[in-house]
Amino acid sequence: MKILFLLSRFPYPLSKGDSLRAFHQMRELSQHAEVAFFAVSDRAILPEEYEKVTFSANIKVFSLGKMGIIKRIFTAFFQKIPFQIAYFYTQKAQKALDAFVEKEKPDVIFCQLARMAKYAENIPVKIKILDYQDAFSAGLQRRIAKSPFYYHPFLQAEYRRMLAFEAAIFTQFPIKTIISEPDRELIAHPEKSEIHLLPNGVQCDVFEPNTTAEKKYDLLFVGNMAYPPNINCVEYIVNETLPLLKSNFPNLLFAIAGINPAPQVRALASKNVLVTGFVPDMRGYYNSSRIFLAPMQIGIGLQNKLLEAMAMQMPCITSSLANKALGATPNVHLFVCDSPESIAEKVAFLLQNPLAAIEMGKKARAFVLEKYSWEGQNEVLLDLISARFHL
Image (cartoon, rainbow, N blue to C red; front, top):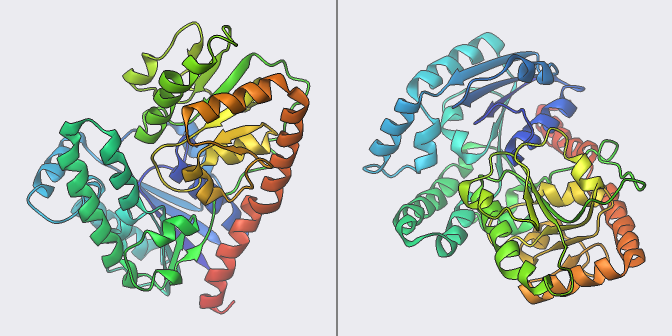
């Protein structure tokens, strides 16, 4: 059996959720089938990045030119397609994909994200799978209230278009997957219950805690720091939560670790806030931090950062929004807080009660080991494919 993945970016480095998901899905499935992938990319791919995906039998990357992207997005203003479809879809890339399919003759097309669905529309294969991953339309809707007013018309238009597009492509794919139950409920299709739940995982043998590591930072947040929900979250922490802790913890240090920090993230840097930029191995920051904060206010899907931090045996504080997808037990596996005051209260508790912090961290790791391994999630995916393929 040969599986061809359609990706909207190269699956390495693992700095974004869709790259992480594709990388581990392909890595695991390559042990049971021949895996190839076709990716569109708006950046040059480095030789060492190709070396990280040797589990893929064949690779085709189509480069998206900046001027072409601008032209397509401008044209999309006068059409009904989502702007992100216009960003990623080109006729030239379609022809390149068609030629690649003719050469590879895959049995299965695995389309990651709705934004790539148009590429799979007319490809004749035995099985087509759409990985919605998240309800992107809902994420756009949540961003409207938190964005500057001049973004509102664009976000509202993209929300309406994406909501309709997510429903329109539903019937084109016999198998649909999504990360969480809350995301599935937000897909605007009457038969959305047919979408299979396929959460992300974590490499628990890689993300193992070093309990003897020196604690340099009190609080930690990690992620792609150009991503609006992450920007919003760290601004919320720094501007609304840290001031509540200042009097009792004047030397508290909050580390914001992640690639591509936006200007507004860099502006948060101070004697109490470290903004790192790119980190080659995030485990060092997990091990050297006392508490993981991810009280997400907007965004969608299962937070990989939480899975990793919990696997690293860190006590975590998140929001109800983020925990809906995770499904952890509040006050046992982590703390769930929905106000700056409650976050500050739980931070103070964990800093002042290190034994309780250690105990919560242990329960967090046990929870992730039981519920969220990549091996377990990809067994489910392989079973879905095998049932259709009659293996």
